Length: 281
Length: 124
Image (cartoon, rainbow over all chains, first blue to last red; front, top):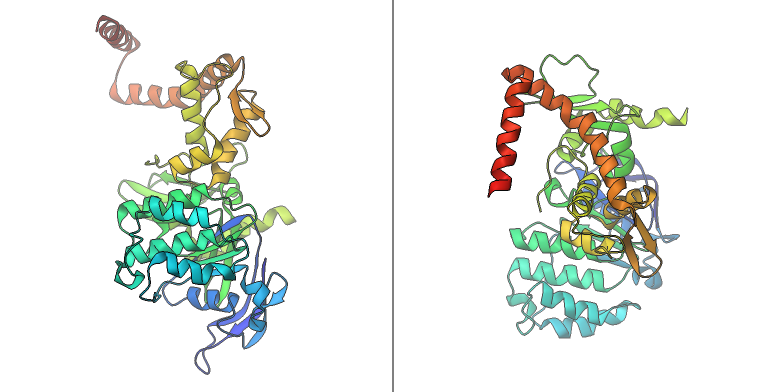
């Protein structure tokens, strides 16, 4: 679905933001794209969608180079940006104007989601609150049935019930033919939603694994200070340490602590990645 | 819905299904909620919910009728009982024994508390 090879990109001379970045994304998955502030999450999404061009290397979606901006390919792509402007027209007019770009647009779904998300349909879109506008675009994004869906910080600016609504509509839609990329640093909002963890750091993808695989290889445990087991990464918590430990094949799977894992990957990425290459030998 | 710290979500879904069966709320051939309904309710990826269904299907606790949904198997109660008893002995008892020894609670005392609790709950 998305294939990025040896991507190099720089906003400023002498400072490469991406330096030999490789990434493969498949249909049927929801990828969580994580990175520190300024790591280039949004810039990476902009390369995938063809809004930015690589300095060198290639970026393809559905087998075509993103920079070609081929109309047929673009009809299979929907981007939900973090910041957006909506015109002073009501929701239904917006849908009438924009839906024809997407051959499998689902009008029924759109109507239904707007009701479910309590988006006021009669007001002009620019008069709605930020949260309402965002929910409108989330509903539109899913209604397009585009095969590639890029969402940049979708839960930012949503209130607590709206975050829950967002997770519910994501859980309810069929993603088997779709590839969803959600960039975020709001780990808690989405940890049960994603099935792949992709971490961008220092110009490269430094971690890219399925959640199932992570649960098979790593164990997330609260351990005592004097626990002598080999630990991949740990943080001090009240009464002990929160630790990532290589999982024994016969032990039970533990719930993945994404925040701990993210910190671990940023600080000790090599050690953690080693747990995943071992089986290839 | 809030998740407990340690257990993966799919195991929490399995636990919920098992307790419905043990409490006889879900009887043989009862049609259980769909994968999608469970995913929405728990606000999780449908694949996560699917994993719980697959696991229980493998254990013969649920059966699937294509295009219709998942149903409780005829001998689900016995299977769940065996599974949960083994789990209790393997995982919960060692914790209980450790706490008993830390707190100095004897078997006699435990027995007394157990009987007291049972007479209370049956009396009310």
